[in-house]
Length: 177
Ligand SMILES: O=P(O)(O)OC[C@@H](O)[C@H]1O[C@@H](OP(=O)(O)O)[C@@H](O)[C@@H](O)[C@@H]1O
Ligand SMILES: [Mg+2]
Ligand SMILES: [Zn+2]
Image (cartoon, rainbow, N blue to C red):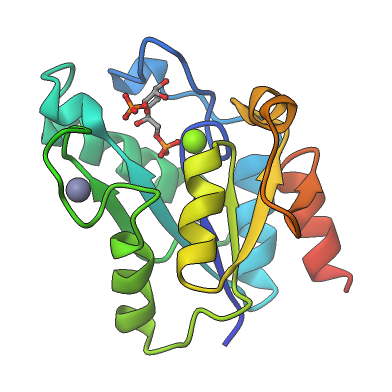
């Protein structure tokens, strides 16, 4: 199965240090919607694993979060593609949940849903926690330079991480591989 797992903020849509708190603030990164649609049409299943501590912090509610994900699905569908399972961690950093990246919980949920082994599966993120989460399940960490990616890169990243400018570059690599 051709499975690609994406972080959300900073990979699919613009990120902000003030969190993405409303549908209006959820702005796709140029080329990302098209990239997901092209991958999907090329037979890839594209899943999403996103930390959303803004829920626990009270910055936005689940209805708002779901509206962002409905918008993502609509935009990709308009390009003839589809988005797979979207998993989010609504917890705060101090709640000790098993799903907040760099914990592996969300990636394991995706693996169980699709009944696949995550070894070598590409997990695309812009933060160090994304890359660390990938390593916990023997997936392939992929860093994009969008969102917090450049900052993450400057602080040092795990050996073996593959680096791409953005999700569009990843789609070009995987589709024409
Ligand atoms: O990149 P993903 O996982 O899709 O989502 C990240 C967001 O949940 C937010 O995560 C926060 O980190 P803390 O949760 O406050 O440590 C901050 O980095 C925010 O800037 C960011 O918008
Ligand atoms: Mg991110
Ligand atoms: Zn959680």
